[in-house]
Image (cartoon, rainbow, N blue to C red; front, side, top):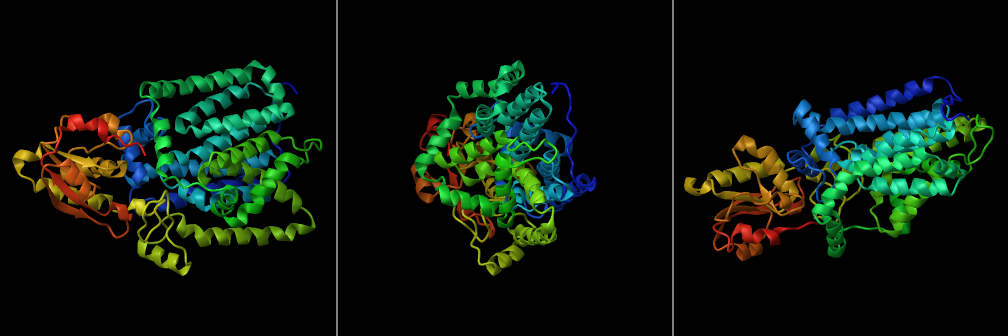
Length: 523
C-alpha cells in the first residue's frame, strides 16, 4: 500500500455508532463537571498548583507537564474547582470518544463502539482518575492516542505517522515517565511481529529522536538535581510504605478496579488482538498483535517490578476498544439477545459502585452507603483512615479548616515576632493548602522539606519563630528550645494523620539555614 494513502475507516455497523459514543463522552464530561465542587480540593492538586508557581523542567516526583497545565488553567480560568477540574474531565471525555473511535477503525459496529465507550465510562478507576487534576488523568488519553496511531500505521502503511507517535510519546514522558514503558512495549511488539519492517524506514527513528529531544530538558534537570525521583523511589521502597501486589492479586485488582462486569470485554480484547480477524481486512488474524504484545509486556513488567495496580490502568481503553470488536462479532448472530442484557448489567454495576469512585453523595450519605455495602474505607500506601477512603475522598477535606486554624495561631502571636515566623509544613498537602488558602487570611507562603518544596528552600527565615504543622510533640521537643501548643486541626472527614496540634517553636535549636539540609524528605 502506498505510504501516503489513507485507508478508509471500517465500520461494519450503522452510522449511529459515533453519535452514541459522542453522547456517552459528553454525559461523562458533564457528570464530572456537575460533581466538581461536591467536595473540596484534593491534596495533590494543591501541590501541583504550587508547582505551577515555580515552573521548571522537573520536580522531585513528576515531570513538568502537570505544573504547566495547572499554570494554564489558573491563568486562563482562575483557581475555582470548576477550573481546576475542567481539563481532567475533558481528558476523560476525549478518552471515551477516542476509545469508541478506535473500536470503529478496528471494525466494531455501533454496538461494539458503544460498549467500548461505556466500559471506560463505567470503570470506577476512570471515574476517579478523570475527576482530579493529576498526571493520571492524562495518561489514558496519551496511551490510547498512541495506540490509535499504531493502528493507523498498520492500516495505511503511512510510516510518517511515526513522527507524530514520537511527538506524542515525548509529551507523554513529560506527563509521566510511565510513557517510556509503553514505548518499550510497543518496540517489543514491533520486533515480535511483521511490523518490524517499520524499523527499515527513517520515520520511526526520527520519531524516536523527537521523543528523546522533547524529554531532554527534563533529563538535564534531573542530572542537575542528582536524580531526585530515583532517590524518592528508593526511599519509598525502603520505608515499606509502598503497597505492592503479587501476580494473582494484581490481576484481581485489574478486574475489580475496571468494573468486574467489564472484565469479559478487556479479556476478549486481548484475545482478539492476538487471534481476532477483521471482517474487512481479508481475513487476516492477529493483525494488531503489536498492541497485544505491548499489553503483555506492561503486565509482566509491572508485576515483576512490584508496581502498583493502577500503573496498568491507562492501557485499558485500548483493550476495551478491541474487546468491543470481539464482543460485537461474537454476538452478531443468534446471540444478539445477549447484547442488551449484558449492557444493562454493565450499567447497573457501574452505577452501583459509582458513589465509591466519585463524590456523588454527601459525605454522610457516602458513609451510610459504604456501611450498607459493608466496605471499609480504602487504605492507600499505609495511610491511616478516617471514615472516608483516603485515595480520593478523605484528601478532599480539611484543608481550608486547617489554614483557618493556622491563621488564628499566626495572628495570635505578638506583632514583633509575627513577620519573622515561618509556617513549616510536614508534607506537600499542608504546604500547598497554606499557599492556596493562606492569602485570604493574610498568611505568608509555607516552607517544607517535603518533595520539591525542599528545593525552594526556607527563604529568609532564620528559625527564630516557627509554626510547625503535622509533627509530633516529641519532634517539637527535639527541634525547639521552647514550644507551645497554639492550635489543633481535626476535620471529621480528613485522614487521621491530618489531625494534629500546631506548635509555636521559639526558637529552633539550630539556625533554619543550618538545619535545612537535614529537613529534606523525599517519600
